[in-house]
Length: 420
Image (cartoon, rainbow, N blue to C red; front, top):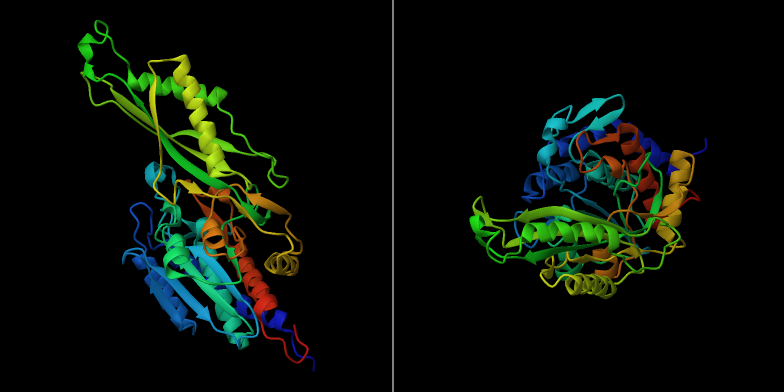
């Protein structure tokens, strides 16, 4: 009798855990971990318990501060292969003002028409569940050649200072290649295999005016800071140009999101002496911080030259959120081939290569720790993230788990008796 291949064994193991995997994804959703305020202790405890339950006992929690733990789990191989890092973030954006738009409770996982609804379902608690069970499946198959390192990080939604940035800079995380399970779809699940991601530059422009008694604003010289800020924002929307070299895998280029946050004035009766608006710019691979800063400074200088009453200041968010660099890896990287091969086996097709429209933790690992990182390949759609009624396809969670297990086996798994 012919023995099943290791590929078939892994697929069968994951299939046998189908209901458990979806239930675990639901338990992560039901454990709030919003950033802000930023506290992943409860969700880290849920993950830690599940890892031990599945027989994965080489687990540790590390962090710069107690309330922002990063869960690390190592599947140690024989030393004959590379170290593969699988990363997912355990925090979510807040429900925020969209709570009234939810058709279900955002913290009650709800399965409707094959979709699992809940905050963080796609971004990215489904992928966390898939990573955990993929590691368990690989562990059941026997000792691997290389190591699998699960890195389930805090604070991704806050910029990564306490998560991937801490692990790359202070903790000294090491691996030969990495994958982040961010949701890759925009219009449909498994739409792309993203080998690069856009970066994010976050800054605030402050505008100074004349704070005074508002009853005298038409009698004494005065500058309305709120009005000046509004005029400047509109001018930026029409005239500000970012210089960059177009990327073949992301033809839409750079996105400028003006006024993601607005503040101005003091109260009724007080003429506004200060106002500000915040902006994030999504950059493409190849762009540099210094070039974008020069574009901004030159634009503001030109605006002030045309309007001497305009007084501005440019402030960037504290590092590392001021400049999260864009990244990309070679399509020839072994992990890219392994994910493509696994997708062909599980999905029946190889998703086309692309650049992820959002930022991820890949710069921390790739640029900070020297680990080539695929920034996005997992279950779900980014287009439903950070919004009401976030969902992920239940079948996609199982597919993600199979893909992760098969790709890991191809890269670090044991090969004996001619089996693959």
